[in-house]
Length: 118
Image (cartoon, rainbow, N blue to C red):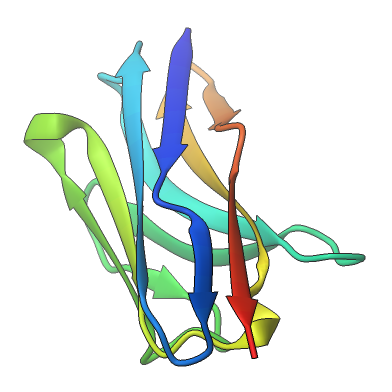
């Protein structure tokens, strides 16, 4: 199976920055893409950013210009650099991996809480 472990969440003031990290392990040879989703209080889970093994990154309109997703394949790790944070960015952030196991499988981390105070 696949394990995803997130870290880097916390409390930050509006305008501040945080960097999230997600490290993948297990059957990840067929990795298609990794990404971050978030779920704010009383909201549905939404896409934040994705980065494929090859191709372009993709961002939600609400974070474009403020967040940057990157990856270190040698460490099987994806990062989310979050700058100019706003209170509306407060959410649990989940790491996601899509992997080709002969079928496309989706895996999720347990999430890391980001709280932005005004």
